Image (cartoon, rainbow, N blue to C red):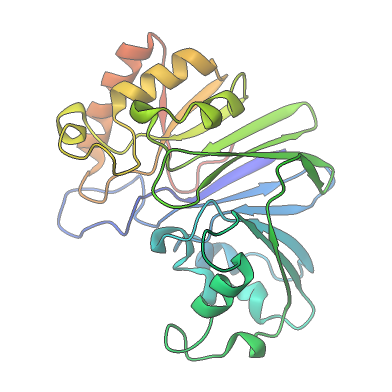
Amino acid sequence: MRARIWGCRGSLATPGQGTLHTGGNTSCVEVRTETGAVVVLDAGTGIRPLGGTLAGVRELDLLLTHLHLDHIEGLAFFAPLHDTQATVRIWGPAQEDGTLAERVATWLSPPFFPLPFQQFEARIEIHEAPAAEWQIGGARVRCARTRHPGPTLAYRLDDGGRSLAYVPDNEPGLDGAEAIALAAGADALLHDAQYTSDEYATRVGWGHASVDEFARVVRETAPRRALMFHHDPWHDDAELERMRMRASELADREVELAVEGLIL
């Protein structure tokens, strides 16, 4: 299994806040399984440049954690959705009001996008993620609810003896235990680490983690690689590096920053 990060921000980065070598696109991760299947995690703005690399891909699966704008704002501009030869299967959480298919179709239609959903050229299938594990391209896929406003999922993919846990929006300070359990022992963990401890004190209940809570998750799950994800748009590279050093100290091990273009 091979993964590449195309976006790792919580929302679009704010210009003029210092260097952003970590990148400014919102959440999107590409996974290639051992069989060559393409799995995409979230459809933030990072999915637009990803789509430009997928010419010739005729089938893929897109796993949405939830429907907040920063995780779906690139979806309408994803090239495979406009390919008559492509089949795109979209998975995501069951909704509290209406169905996932209705919500996605609404977003991919006027007034939010000029083209009606029915005119997208790809074959699009929309499925609510099952409670039980399922298979995609030979990979074992599992999901769990996170602590975040609205129906939100974390995902874990196991394939070819490797595992990736993707938990971009989770507030372990208010529990989030189900998603934390899902990540236990993963080869790579991408977990929310949006706030400093001071910032989190004024944002309790917003559905995101402080570096202190991120470090606790790392200690509890013991992944081979732990990456801070869902960076705050106001945090430049220098601030993120200070946060990374703090998290490493608290976790008593080295942790990494998710960076656009990073390959796992």
